[in-house]
Length: 116
View 1 (cartoon, rainbow, N blue to C red):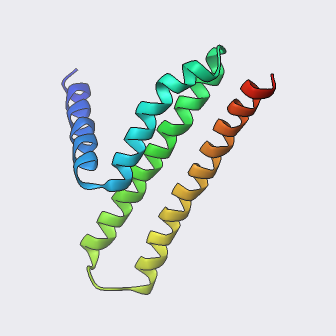
View 2 (tube, rainbow, N blue to C red):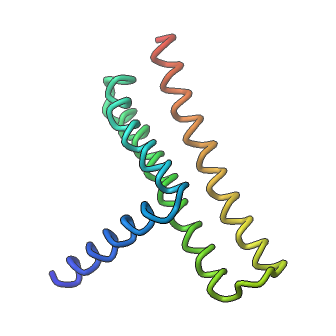
View 3 (cartoon, helix red, strand yellow):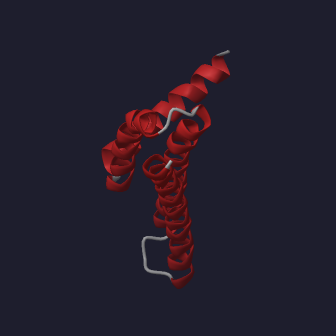
């Protein structure tokens, strides 16, 4: 039980630090706060609501991973390095892919609401 509580504290610390220091994470936390009630307005179907909120949570998770990669890269070498730049670009591309997926899921839900 102590390990579970310690893991919870570590996660909570990461959420707080990310929200305090990273603009993109703050923006996605705001998007999550908006997404939860909006999901209930957009669809009466439980799995659609879960998908709408879930895809925003996954965007947030990928953003945290991208931030972790960037922080690690900056720790390894604060100097400009071509390969480090590529690693950071890959992380950024992962966030972009998730944002596109989130946009598609939300667009589908909005279209279904408007047309259905």
